[in-house]
Length: 224
Image (cartoon, rainbow, N blue to C red; front, side, top):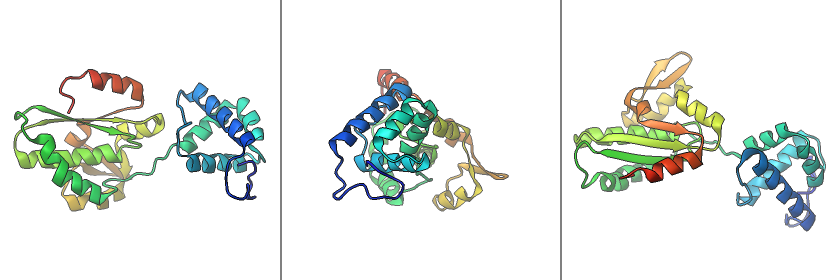
């Protein structure tokens, strides 16, 4: 971690005490500006992202990087964005969604009064593909049940830019290839992309403030 620009940083990859101290300073600066604590984040991910920032800024060491970000709020924001993992797609893990459909949803809906409210929370929602996928799956199941349940999905993420995309509900036109096999009608053609519309969109509520959302959800009776 002490050197970048394509050069090896040491034999076993263990972080030296000096680098550990510099890393703690990075976490402190990140938390001070973004109000998010990355100190428990996956170490290998943190190291890769910081090494990338060293290369981008043509810096040689963690100490150099700490000095740099102490004077650059813009770079702290850039590191924050790099640390966020936004890889997602509609029905990204088909096996997981199949298990959800076959094993989880029957238990979620059983013993509920027809017409009652069912709430689901999608954490780390990124740009919205997961909560909208959940909305499609839930609406499909609700139609099969014919019990008129009301559905609400809370979606949260610390990345405000990703949440803005989720709220807009606009995606490339090729998303149809991800959702059409399931018979969901959650999208409508729009040039140059597709928009999540109707009940799929209206049932999903996206926030970028997890602490506020958690508080509101925990105060809500009959949360699921």
